[in-house]
Length: 373
Image 1 (tube, rainbow, N blue to C red):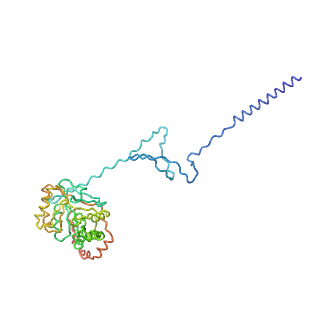
Image 2 (tube, helix red, strand yellow):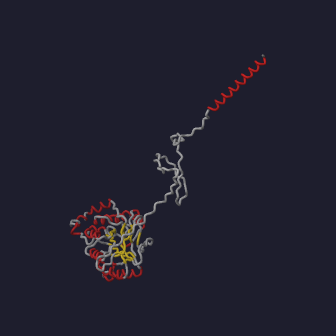
């Protein structure tokens, strides 16, 4: 009997142990280990308002070293559209830089419609930023003329009879030139200044009263030199009643360094000369022609300095143009990219002269006529 009791007790003990093991296994089986949580996609990793989010590194592919672009806070970018079939999508080819547009071809110079007229070879545009200088007599850097090309330039006008004679010779040959006008002369004869502009010529300035800026008081007083220059610019601009070029020629071709610096600040180009006709010393047309042609034979090309103020030059122009054409020379017209900007201070000085209104009483139709379109 004792043996039976012991066996039963042992069996009960084993049963309770087995039940405990099974229960423990169930507990283990139903328990899920907690995984480490990550921030949701798109959520900020750093909640500090002053923290800078990490951004992509941009590589600049040019001649400079590859550097990391600075990280800048910005608004979220708009979503990028992608191909619908992402499984079959292939990476897009890297975009190449856009092709540079070919420079526009220069418009052709129209043929001269005047019988026997010489006609222009081409037109050259000058960017006057920084006050570049032209004319090998003083400036050697910019050589824009080809062999046997010339630029016709005239100083000291506008002047009655002489300037219109020059204009007619140019018009009869479909040519254009640069006229460096004296401000005071322009106030006396604004109707002629307008004729020069109406014919399509380039108009620059040549001081107010043709003072040598390399001599005192101008050489020692920059303010007086500036006034002589700027009054000339304002006077010519007002006489023409329209835009003029930021082109300037020094009287007697004297170029004080301080004044050169000032013109550079004003973005006004300086035109000297390659061929000085010295027509102010010559009183016969044939001598003017000989002076120009002999120097051209020596130099082969150049900016020609003449004076529409001089009667002999005006009379020489038809034959001089004929000889230029016969000699195989070609005329280039020079224009500016942008017109000159006058200064109000000097505009007011010219207005106070009260001379412009005296010569501007004639109607436009009696002053300017269209000679070709």
